[in-house]
Image (tube, rainbow, N blue to C red):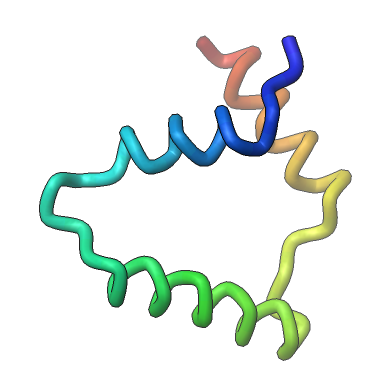
Length: 58
């Protein structure tokens, strides 16, 4: 099932800890952007493989 971006964002926000702040979110987003810029990323195919392995182990 495909979700709209709005529905996905609502789900993400609803799953955040109650004590999460906007500053927490900004810091995490910035950290991800900084890591991506420095090349510290996992290739898409490797992520898909890891997810498949975890699901298979269940």
